[in-house]
Image (cartoon, rainbow, N blue to C red; front, side):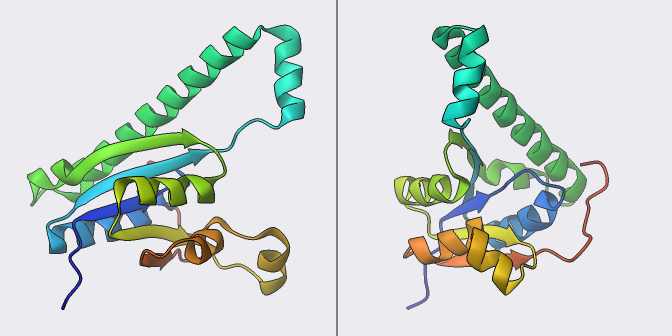
Length: 169
């Protein structure tokens, strides 16, 4: 039996290659008549940085600034996806309707993707990856590597070409 792909989690770090990966997610969504949930993980401030901030502003103000930052990132992601839809879907204007939700959560990016994939019951995770050296990956780990080994869901890893940069992003 062929897999039924109805919900695609598109993981994005909002980098210059995000449109490249997005196009793969949208192509699959169109092919399978699926919806896309875009997910972005915002790394939290370190405890040291948090304490420095709270020396100058109250904890309540810090929380409010954090909430505002999340909303700004969510709006930025929404604008970028809308721009991509406008640029790429001239022949298919309903394509943007495939974006069902945009999730921006604070946490380590890999953990955010894993939690979101479970919560939304994603049928497929689509994410990009740059070329990494074996030593660099062994020492640092990558978000993609952590997601691949932390989920039981299928993951499409889109290899981002060296030097790729989308104009206007």
